[in-house]
Length: 281
Image 1 (cartoon, rainbow, N blue to C red):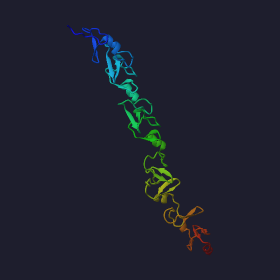
Image 2 (image 1 turned 60 degrees about the vertical axis):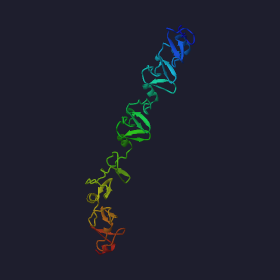
Image 3 (image 1 turned 180 degrees about the vertical axis):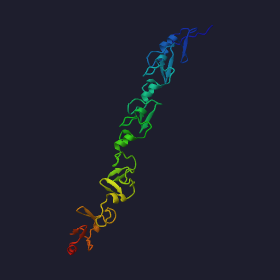
Image 4 (image 1 turned 90 degrees about the vertical axis):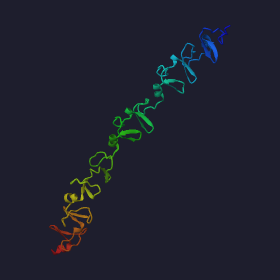
């Protein structure tokens, strides 16, 4: 006599019929659909014995219900990610939701795309642009001013000191003279073009001169010793009278050599005399 092989629930004979084994129990398809089938996490309907079932972390789906929550792409044979809110997403949509967002356009920076990271922030490469000229920085060097990014040329143009001589930005080094910045290569003698960095020089009417050129081209000639009157070394004080100039130490009586600086004097031709010697002439 053949042993009975019945459905655990309805007791129908299962010989020659389709059945499902559930928790060590044999169940006919009708009872399985009614009493044992898992509920689909998406459509909330039972997943019948004849349906293909997918499961992930104790959740179950009909094969056709297992889709990306964002783009609805079928994921039965695709990589996917499960979010904390329970949504299932394809790799692309998951990256968009979870990825870093560009500081310029606020769109997601997709993994593997060209991007720039700076101070723990991220930009699309084409969004990382100069605040002034709006061109992408790419492989150029850049500088920041507050939260704004500048390419080198724009930063120099906007913020660098301008050379007093050529009016162009000073990007490195430079010389300061009378509170004015100069390129070292612009700080040259106006006459001979000799570079004046680290040498003695003087200025006249906003131009700078080396010592030699100042003596020969600019300085007044002493009416006494016939040498140039400069501000270098001995004899910096000058006496001027009727278009003539003297070193202070040369402004002496022609006859007795008395210094006449800040004293009364008499001039006769190109010579000067003290009042006493003038009376004897």
